[in-house]
Length: 216
Image (cartoon, rainbow, N blue to C red; front, top):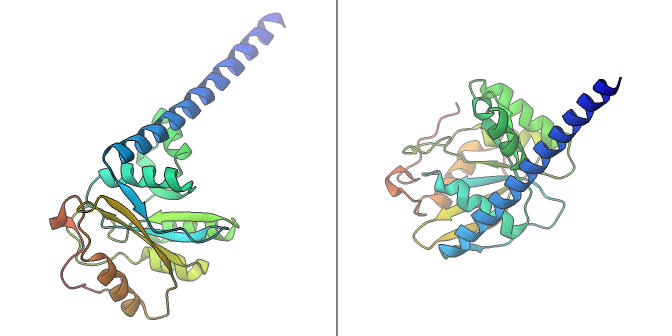
């Protein structure tokens, strides 16, 4: 009985130390991202809509992993609790715990319909929920948008807030609420026009030229 009690105590101590380490790591990471954001002389332009926050945060152009760092810095400055969909392959034992604390939600990105359904369900189950998505679906040259964010927004009945990474001006910008219509092509053209002149870290991989529209 005595040995059993000691073993349980040790397990509890290890458990709480593990949580404390993760929380400390998150706090330190947020401080670091905010410090780098300020050190690099970046700034945030625009204001978030009033609470309760319930919208898709559409971020682009996404051309570099540095976008994530500046996005975290801007979220910290604006005190925004936003979530993001991350490939479940990234959720290794320690890294996965840290990613979850940063707002990452594991999904199987090979199953597009499942990802959309999960996102819709999260909106329906939460009075306040912000989901960060990049419309390009990757960091390579963009000629068209992925349609997932459109279907999520329409079926969950939530608006979009367009956010951009302007490396030329060193600005993370926020635009007012944008409500999608039933005309996907027209909505995509408006979103494309908004982003296409914004210079990402690697402009050649950004949003430029004419939109290639497909329903897929």
